[in-house]
Length: 161
Image 1 (cartoon, rainbow, N blue to C red):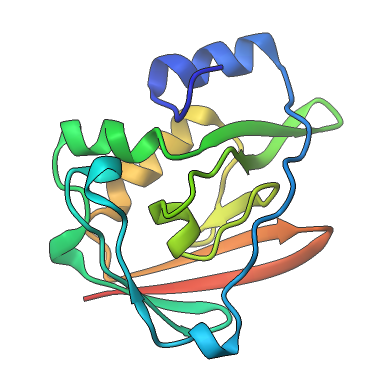
Image 2 (cartoon, rainbow, N blue to C red):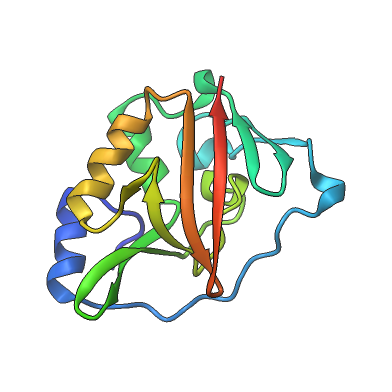
């Protein structure tokens, strides 16, 4: 499986119905790191993405620094894997693995092994829906992600300014 996903590679992943084993978790920002801004290195997205963590489950993202075009989107998507998470033969979310160190995904608090279940109250039960939601999120001011981490449900909130 190649790094990241696009419509074609998501289709291949689902067709193969392969699951990856969980990758060891990366360290999470602790309370002493809260409030610090971080940016993804130039090599990962073409320009730095400014992210500020304001609590354990809330971040502020700078809209001007987010990937804005297709070239940047492809580099952005290559910073992690998204693999369908199946339960009783149906997709119940997407397991995130292979998160690159210093990537946008790491900066917004995601860890290897997290299963993304819903974005803004929309279930992530289809690869095409995941890609469509990503496209729609570029114009939002607030994004809420419901995920499962080590069997525990959590909601992460992102304000985009």
